[in-house]
Image (cartoon, rainbow over all chains, first blue to last red; front, top):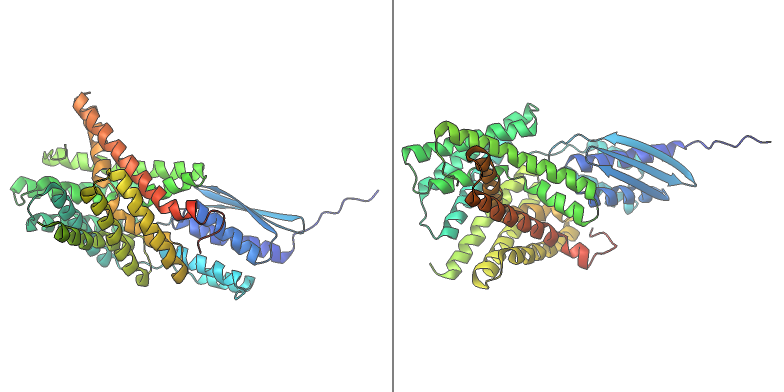
Length: 268
Length: 155
Protein backbone atom coordinates (compact mmCIF):
# COMPACT_ATOMS: atom_id res chain seq x y z
CA UNK A 1 0.00 0.00 0.00
CA UNK A 2 1.38 3.36 -0.97
CA UNK A 3 1.56 6.18 1.51
CA UNK A 4 -0.63 9.09 0.36
CA UNK A 5 1.62 11.77 -0.93
CA UNK A 6 1.59 15.03 0.98
CA UNK A 7 1.86 17.81 -1.54
CA UNK A 8 4.01 20.72 -0.50
CA UNK A 9 3.17 24.30 -1.22
CA UNK A 10 5.39 25.67 -3.95
CA UNK A 11 7.50 28.65 -2.99
CA UNK A 12 5.88 31.02 -5.46
CA UNK A 13 2.40 30.23 -4.10
CA UNK A 14 3.63 30.93 -0.58
CA UNK A 15 5.07 34.23 -1.75
CA UNK A 16 1.81 35.20 -3.51
CA UNK A 17 -0.20 34.34 -0.39
CA UNK A 18 2.07 36.65 1.59
CA UNK A 19 1.63 39.43 -0.93
CA UNK A 20 -2.16 39.07 -0.83
CA UNK A 21 -2.11 39.18 2.97
CA UNK A 22 0.15 42.23 2.95
CA UNK A 23 -2.09 44.08 0.49
CA UNK A 24 -5.28 43.17 2.35
CA UNK A 25 -3.84 44.10 5.72
CA UNK A 26 -2.63 47.45 4.42
CA UNK A 27 -6.10 48.23 3.07
CA UNK A 28 -7.81 47.18 6.29
CA UNK A 29 -5.41 49.19 8.45
CA UNK A 30 -5.97 52.36 6.48
CA UNK A 31 -9.75 52.38 6.54
CA UNK A 32 -10.89 50.69 3.31
CA UNK A 33 -14.35 49.15 3.38
CA UNK A 34 -14.62 45.34 3.47
CA UNK A 35 -15.94 44.96 -0.08
CA UNK A 36 -12.90 46.83 -1.41
CA UNK A 37 -10.44 44.75 0.66
CA UNK A 38 -11.95 41.52 -0.55
CA UNK A 39 -12.10 42.50 -4.23
CA UNK A 40 -8.58 43.94 -4.35
CA UNK A 41 -7.04 40.89 -2.63
CA UNK A 42 -8.94 38.44 -4.80
CA UNK A 43 -8.04 40.23 -8.03
CA UNK A 44 -4.39 40.52 -6.99
CA UNK A 45 -4.21 36.78 -6.30
CA UNK A 46 -5.92 35.86 -9.58
CA UNK A 47 -3.68 38.27 -11.53
CA UNK A 48 -0.61 36.54 -10.07
CA UNK A 49 -1.83 33.14 -11.25
CA UNK A 50 -3.91 31.69 -8.41
CA UNK A 51 -7.10 29.80 -9.27
CA UNK A 52 -8.99 31.19 -6.31
CA UNK A 53 -8.42 33.42 -3.30
CA UNK A 54 -10.78 33.09 -0.35
CA UNK A 55 -10.81 35.77 2.30
CA UNK A 56 -12.33 35.98 5.78
CA UNK A 57 -12.45 39.47 7.24
CA UNK A 58 -12.76 40.45 10.88
CA UNK A 59 -12.37 43.88 12.41
CA UNK A 60 -9.06 42.91 14.01
CA UNK A 61 -7.70 40.36 11.63
CA UNK A 62 -7.68 38.83 8.19
CA UNK A 63 -7.42 35.18 7.12
CA UNK A 64 -6.91 34.17 3.53
CA UNK A 65 -6.36 31.06 1.48
CA UNK A 66 -4.94 30.83 -2.02
CA UNK A 67 -5.74 27.77 -4.14
CA UNK A 68 -3.79 26.50 -7.15
CA UNK A 69 -3.83 23.01 -8.68
CA UNK A 70 -5.73 21.77 -5.65
CA UNK A 71 -3.06 23.01 -3.25
CA UNK A 72 -4.30 25.41 -0.58
CA UNK A 73 -2.17 27.78 1.41
CA UNK A 74 -3.66 29.71 4.31
CA UNK A 75 -2.34 32.55 6.38
CA UNK A 76 -3.73 34.88 9.06
CA UNK A 77 -2.70 38.41 9.99
CA UNK A 78 -3.59 40.59 12.94
CA UNK A 79 -4.95 44.03 12.12
CA UNK A 80 -3.89 47.15 14.00
CA UNK A 81 -5.71 50.33 13.08
CA UNK A 82 -3.32 52.86 11.57
CA UNK A 83 -5.86 55.61 10.94
CA UNK A 84 -7.64 56.47 7.73
CA UNK A 85 -5.22 57.02 4.87
CA UNK A 86 -6.67 57.18 1.37
CA UNK A 87 -3.21 57.59 -0.14
CA UNK A 88 -2.17 54.12 1.01
CA UNK A 89 -5.47 52.65 -0.19
CA UNK A 90 -5.03 54.24 -3.62
CA UNK A 91 -1.46 52.97 -3.94
CA UNK A 92 -2.40 49.37 -3.06
CA UNK A 93 -5.26 49.46 -5.53
CA UNK A 94 -3.01 50.80 -8.31
CA UNK A 95 -0.50 48.05 -7.61
CA UNK A 96 -3.30 45.51 -8.05
CA UNK A 97 -4.39 47.17 -11.32
CA UNK A 98 -0.82 47.07 -12.66
CA UNK A 99 -0.56 43.37 -11.77
CA UNK A 100 -3.85 42.77 -13.55
CA UNK A 101 -2.51 44.49 -16.66
CA UNK A 102 0.54 42.18 -16.47
CA UNK A 103 2.87 45.13 -15.97
CA UNK A 104 4.05 43.75 -12.62
CA UNK A 105 4.99 40.20 -11.67
CA UNK A 106 5.06 38.88 -8.09
CA UNK A 107 8.50 40.39 -7.45
CA UNK A 108 7.37 43.72 -8.84
CA UNK A 109 4.25 43.71 -6.67
CA UNK A 110 6.36 42.92 -3.60
CA UNK A 111 8.71 45.80 -4.37
CA UNK A 112 5.85 48.25 -4.95
CA UNK A 113 3.97 47.22 -1.79
CA UNK A 114 7.12 47.59 0.30
CA UNK A 115 7.75 51.03 -1.13
CA UNK A 116 4.35 52.43 -0.09
CA UNK A 117 4.92 55.05 2.57
CA UNK A 118 1.51 56.32 3.73
CA UNK A 119 1.49 60.03 2.99
CA UNK A 120 0.47 62.47 5.73
CA UNK A 121 -0.27 66.16 5.54
CA UNK A 122 1.75 68.43 7.84
CA UNK A 123 -0.04 68.80 11.17
CA UNK A 124 -0.41 72.57 11.13
CA UNK A 125 -1.96 72.46 7.64
CA UNK A 126 -4.55 69.95 8.80
CA UNK A 127 -5.30 71.99 11.93
CA UNK A 128 -5.80 75.23 9.99
CA UNK A 129 -8.03 73.56 7.40
CA UNK A 130 -10.07 71.77 10.06
CA UNK A 131 -10.45 75.07 11.94
CA UNK A 132 -11.75 76.68 8.77
CA UNK A 133 -14.03 73.69 8.20
CA UNK A 134 -15.66 74.08 11.60
CA UNK A 135 -16.01 77.83 11.01
CA UNK A 136 -17.77 76.97 7.72
CA UNK A 137 -20.04 74.59 9.66
CA UNK A 138 -20.83 77.45 12.05
CA UNK A 139 -21.79 79.65 9.10
CA UNK A 140 -23.96 76.88 7.63
CA UNK A 141 -25.64 76.51 11.02
CA UNK A 142 -26.32 80.23 11.16
CA UNK A 143 -27.80 80.18 7.65
CA UNK A 144 -30.07 77.28 8.59
CA UNK A 145 -31.39 79.39 11.46
CA UNK A 146 -31.63 82.55 9.35
CA UNK A 147 -29.37 84.38 11.81
CA UNK A 148 -27.01 87.23 10.96
CA UNK A 149 -23.38 86.49 10.21
CA UNK A 150 -21.19 87.16 13.24
CA UNK A 151 -17.46 87.32 12.59
CA UNK A 152 -16.49 86.60 16.20
CA UNK A 153 -18.47 83.37 16.22
CA UNK A 154 -16.35 82.15 13.31
CA UNK A 155 -13.11 83.31 14.89
CA UNK A 156 -13.94 81.56 18.16
CA UNK A 157 -14.99 78.37 16.36
CA UNK A 158 -11.82 78.48 14.26
CA UNK A 159 -9.52 78.88 17.27
CA UNK A 160 -11.29 76.23 19.37
CA UNK A 161 -11.32 73.58 16.65
CA UNK A 162 -7.84 74.31 15.28
CA UNK A 163 -6.31 74.02 18.77
CA UNK A 164 -8.30 70.84 19.42
CA UNK A 165 -7.18 69.33 16.11
CA UNK A 166 -3.55 70.12 16.87
CA UNK A 167 -3.92 68.46 20.28
CA UNK A 168 -5.68 65.48 18.70
CA UNK A 169 -2.84 64.91 16.24
CA UNK A 170 -0.25 65.32 18.96
CA UNK A 171 -1.97 62.80 21.27
CA UNK A 172 -2.43 60.40 18.35
CA UNK A 173 1.31 60.61 17.62
CA UNK A 174 1.96 59.59 21.24
CA UNK A 175 -0.20 56.48 20.63
CA UNK A 176 -2.93 57.30 23.12
CA UNK A 177 -6.09 55.26 22.84
CA UNK A 178 -8.41 57.10 20.39
CA UNK A 179 -11.20 57.13 22.98
CA UNK A 180 -9.00 58.90 25.54
CA UNK A 181 -7.72 61.21 22.83
CA UNK A 182 -11.22 62.21 21.70
CA UNK A 183 -12.48 62.80 25.24
CA UNK A 184 -9.52 65.03 26.14
CA UNK A 185 -9.58 67.03 22.92
CA UNK A 186 -13.37 67.49 23.00
CA UNK A 187 -12.86 68.90 26.50
CA UNK A 188 -10.27 71.34 25.14
CA UNK A 189 -12.47 72.47 22.23
CA UNK A 190 -15.54 73.00 24.40
CA UNK A 191 -13.51 74.79 27.07
CA UNK A 192 -12.19 77.32 24.56
CA UNK A 193 -15.63 77.89 23.05
CA UNK A 194 -17.09 78.24 26.56
CA UNK A 195 -14.83 81.25 27.23
CA UNK A 196 -16.70 83.08 24.47
CA UNK A 197 -19.97 82.32 26.21
CA UNK A 198 -18.71 83.33 29.67
CA UNK A 199 -17.17 86.61 28.54
CA UNK A 200 -19.96 87.37 26.08
CA UNK A 201 -17.63 87.70 23.09
CA UNK A 202 -20.03 86.20 20.58
CA UNK A 203 -23.66 86.62 19.59
CA UNK A 204 -24.39 82.94 18.94
CA UNK A 205 -22.56 80.94 21.62
CA UNK A 206 -24.65 77.86 20.98
CA UNK A 207 -23.47 77.68 17.36
CA UNK A 208 -19.83 78.13 18.37
CA UNK A 209 -20.07 75.42 21.06
CA UNK A 210 -21.68 72.91 18.72
CA UNK A 211 -19.62 73.69 15.60
CA UNK A 212 -16.23 73.43 17.31
CA UNK A 213 -16.73 69.75 18.20
CA UNK A 214 -17.87 68.71 14.72
CA UNK A 215 -14.30 67.72 13.87
CA UNK A 216 -14.80 64.71 16.16
CA UNK A 217 -17.77 63.23 14.29
CA UNK A 218 -16.42 59.90 12.96
CA UNK A 219 -18.05 60.28 9.56
CA UNK A 220 -15.80 57.82 7.75
CA UNK A 221 -16.30 54.91 10.19
CA UNK A 222 -20.07 55.53 10.21
CA UNK A 223 -20.30 55.49 6.40
CA UNK A 224 -18.02 52.45 6.20
CA UNK A 225 -20.14 50.68 8.82
CA UNK A 226 -23.36 51.16 6.90
CA UNK A 227 -21.84 50.32 3.51
CA UNK A 228 -20.26 47.15 4.95
CA UNK A 229 -23.62 46.04 6.26
CA UNK A 230 -25.44 46.94 3.03
CA UNK A 231 -22.92 44.83 1.09
CA UNK A 232 -23.28 41.82 3.37
CA UNK A 233 -20.30 42.22 5.73
CA UNK A 234 -22.45 42.43 8.85
CA UNK A 235 -19.60 41.50 11.21
CA UNK A 236 -17.13 44.20 10.24
CA UNK A 237 -20.01 46.65 9.83
CA UNK A 238 -21.13 46.15 13.42
CA UNK A 239 -17.55 46.47 14.73
CA UNK A 240 -17.00 49.71 12.89
CA UNK A 241 -20.40 51.10 13.88
CA UNK A 242 -19.85 50.30 17.58
CA UNK A 243 -16.40 51.89 17.47
CA UNK A 244 -17.86 55.05 15.88
CA UNK A 245 -20.59 55.30 18.53
CA UNK A 246 -17.98 54.80 21.28
CA UNK A 247 -15.87 57.62 19.82
CA UNK A 248 -18.94 59.88 19.85
CA UNK A 249 -19.66 58.89 23.45
CA UNK A 250 -16.07 59.66 24.45
CA UNK A 251 -16.47 63.12 22.92
CA UNK A 252 -19.72 63.57 24.82
CA UNK A 253 -17.92 62.78 28.05
CA UNK A 254 -15.38 65.50 27.24
CA UNK A 255 -18.11 68.01 26.32
CA UNK A 256 -20.16 67.32 29.44
CA UNK A 257 -17.08 67.60 31.65
CA UNK A 258 -16.17 70.94 30.06
CA UNK A 259 -19.72 72.24 30.43
CA UNK A 260 -19.71 71.22 34.10
CA UNK A 261 -16.35 72.85 34.80
CA UNK A 262 -17.30 76.15 33.11
CA UNK A 263 -20.96 75.87 34.04
CA UNK A 264 -22.19 76.76 30.55
CA UNK A 265 -25.08 74.51 29.56
CA UNK A 266 -25.79 75.91 26.13
CA UNK A 267 -26.32 72.65 24.23
CA UNK A 268 -29.81 71.61 25.23
CA UNK B 1 -31.33 87.21 0.93
CA UNK B 2 -32.27 85.86 -2.46
CA UNK B 3 -32.25 82.15 -3.02
CA UNK B 4 -29.55 82.04 -5.68
CA UNK B 5 -27.14 83.92 -3.44
CA UNK B 6 -27.91 81.52 -0.56
CA UNK B 7 -27.29 78.57 -2.86
CA UNK B 8 -23.95 79.98 -4.00
CA UNK B 9 -22.94 80.62 -0.41
CA UNK B 10 -23.91 77.06 0.50
CA UNK B 11 -21.86 75.76 -2.46
CA UNK B 12 -18.77 77.70 -1.37
CA UNK B 13 -19.07 76.92 2.34
CA UNK B 14 -19.53 73.18 1.85
CA UNK B 15 -16.28 72.92 -0.13
CA UNK B 16 -14.23 73.95 2.93
CA UNK B 17 -15.12 71.04 5.27
CA UNK B 18 -14.85 68.62 2.33
CA UNK B 19 -11.20 69.63 1.87
CA UNK B 20 -10.49 69.86 5.61
CA UNK B 21 -11.71 66.34 6.27
CA UNK B 22 -10.13 65.01 3.07
CA UNK B 23 -6.84 66.12 4.65
CA UNK B 24 -7.64 64.21 7.86
CA UNK B 25 -8.26 61.15 5.63
CA UNK B 26 -4.95 61.83 3.83
CA UNK B 27 -6.50 61.96 0.38
CA UNK B 28 -3.65 62.46 -2.15
CA UNK B 29 -3.08 66.11 -3.03
CA UNK B 30 -4.22 66.03 -6.68
CA UNK B 31 -7.57 64.54 -5.58
CA UNK B 32 -8.33 67.32 -3.07
CA UNK B 33 -9.96 69.57 -5.68
CA UNK B 34 -12.30 66.76 -6.69
CA UNK B 35 -13.29 66.35 -3.03
CA UNK B 36 -14.01 70.08 -2.79
CA UNK B 37 -16.10 70.09 -5.94
CA UNK B 38 -18.01 66.93 -5.00
CA UNK B 39 -18.66 68.23 -1.48
CA UNK B 40 -19.96 71.52 -2.82
CA UNK B 41 -22.17 69.85 -5.44
CA UNK B 42 -23.58 67.38 -2.91
CA UNK B 43 -24.39 69.91 -0.22
CA UNK B 44 -25.80 72.49 -2.65
CA UNK B 45 -27.93 69.82 -4.31
CA UNK B 46 -29.28 68.73 -0.95
CA UNK B 47 -29.93 72.38 -0.05
CA UNK B 48 -31.91 72.81 -3.28
CA UNK B 49 -33.95 69.64 -2.81
CA UNK B 50 -34.57 70.23 0.89
CA UNK B 51 -35.20 73.98 1.00
CA UNK B 52 -36.58 74.75 -2.43
CA UNK B 53 -38.23 71.54 -3.67
CA UNK B 54 -39.02 70.79 -0.55
CA UNK B 55 -38.33 67.11 0.02
CA UNK B 56 -37.75 65.44 3.42
CA UNK B 57 -34.09 65.84 4.42
CA UNK B 58 -33.38 62.09 4.37
CA UNK B 59 -34.62 61.71 0.78
CA UNK B 60 -32.77 64.85 -0.31
CA UNK B 61 -29.59 63.41 1.28
CA UNK B 62 -30.06 60.07 -0.49
CA UNK B 63 -30.44 61.74 -3.90
CA UNK B 64 -27.50 64.10 -3.33
CA UNK B 65 -25.27 61.24 -2.18
CA UNK B 66 -26.31 59.13 -5.17
CA UNK B 67 -25.47 61.92 -7.62
CA UNK B 68 -22.08 62.58 -5.97
CA UNK B 69 -21.35 58.86 -6.07
CA UNK B 70 -22.08 58.68 -9.81
CA UNK B 71 -19.71 61.60 -10.40
CA UNK B 72 -17.20 59.82 -8.16
CA UNK B 73 -17.39 56.66 -10.30
CA UNK B 74 -16.54 58.72 -13.40
CA UNK B 75 -13.54 60.32 -11.69
CA UNK B 76 -12.47 57.00 -10.19
CA UNK B 77 -12.22 55.36 -13.60
CA UNK B 78 -10.25 58.31 -14.95
CA UNK B 79 -7.97 58.44 -11.92
CA UNK B 80 -7.60 54.71 -11.18
CA UNK B 81 -8.63 54.89 -7.54
CA UNK B 82 -11.64 53.70 -5.58
CA UNK B 83 -14.54 56.23 -5.75
CA UNK B 84 -14.63 56.41 -1.94
CA UNK B 85 -11.32 58.29 -2.07
CA UNK B 86 -13.27 61.25 -3.42
CA UNK B 87 -16.80 60.70 -2.22
CA UNK B 88 -16.56 60.06 1.53
CA UNK B 89 -14.85 63.40 2.18
CA UNK B 90 -17.55 64.98 0.02
CA UNK B 91 -20.22 63.48 2.28
CA UNK B 92 -18.75 65.03 5.44
CA UNK B 93 -20.55 68.39 5.13
CA UNK B 94 -23.82 66.43 5.07
CA UNK B 95 -23.02 64.22 8.09
CA UNK B 96 -25.52 65.05 10.85
CA UNK B 97 -22.97 65.80 13.57
CA UNK B 98 -25.09 68.21 15.58
CA UNK B 99 -28.05 65.77 15.62
CA UNK B 100 -25.81 62.92 16.80
CA UNK B 101 -24.20 64.97 19.59
CA UNK B 102 -27.54 66.43 20.72
CA UNK B 103 -29.03 62.94 21.00
CA UNK B 104 -26.14 61.61 23.09
CA UNK B 105 -26.00 64.72 25.28
CA UNK B 106 -29.74 64.40 25.94
CA UNK B 107 -29.10 60.82 27.12
CA UNK B 108 -26.37 62.09 29.44
CA UNK B 109 -28.79 64.70 30.77
CA UNK B 110 -31.36 62.00 31.51
CA UNK B 111 -28.68 60.26 33.53
CA UNK B 112 -27.83 63.49 35.39
CA UNK B 113 -31.26 64.93 36.04
CA UNK B 114 -33.49 61.88 35.91
CA UNK B 115 -36.05 60.89 33.30
CA UNK B 116 -38.17 63.52 31.64
CA UNK B 117 -40.28 63.20 28.56
CA UNK B 118 -38.83 66.30 26.94
CA UNK B 119 -35.27 64.99 27.20
CA UNK B 120 -36.21 61.56 25.92
CA UNK B 121 -38.03 63.19 23.02
CA UNK B 122 -34.92 65.25 22.19
CA UNK B 123 -32.79 62.12 22.31
CA UNK B 124 -35.13 60.07 20.12
CA UNK B 125 -35.85 62.82 17.57
CA UNK B 126 -32.21 63.74 17.07
CA UNK B 127 -30.86 60.20 17.28
CA UNK B 128 -33.29 58.86 14.68
CA UNK B 129 -32.64 61.84 12.42
CA UNK B 130 -28.89 61.23 12.64
CA UNK B 131 -29.29 57.50 12.01
CA UNK B 132 -31.51 57.91 8.98
CA UNK B 133 -29.35 60.63 7.41
CA UNK B 134 -26.19 58.53 7.84
CA UNK B 135 -27.98 55.51 6.36
CA UNK B 136 -29.11 57.69 3.43
CA UNK B 137 -25.52 58.88 2.90
CA UNK B 138 -24.09 55.36 2.87
CA UNK B 139 -26.83 53.85 0.73
CA UNK B 140 -26.61 56.82 -1.64
CA UNK B 141 -22.87 56.22 -1.99
CA UNK B 142 -23.51 52.53 -2.68
CA UNK B 143 -26.18 53.27 -5.33
CA UNK B 144 -23.99 52.94 -8.46
CA UNK B 145 -22.76 49.57 -7.17
CA UNK B 146 -26.28 48.43 -6.32
CA UNK B 147 -27.86 49.59 -9.59
CA UNK B 148 -25.25 49.50 -12.37
CA UNK B 149 -22.10 47.66 -11.23
CA UNK B 150 -23.83 44.71 -9.65
CA UNK B 151 -21.29 41.93 -10.20
CA UNK B 152 -18.37 43.88 -11.55
CA UNK B 153 -15.90 46.19 -9.88
CA UNK B 154 -16.11 49.95 -10.48
CA UNK B 155 -12.37 50.29 -11.13
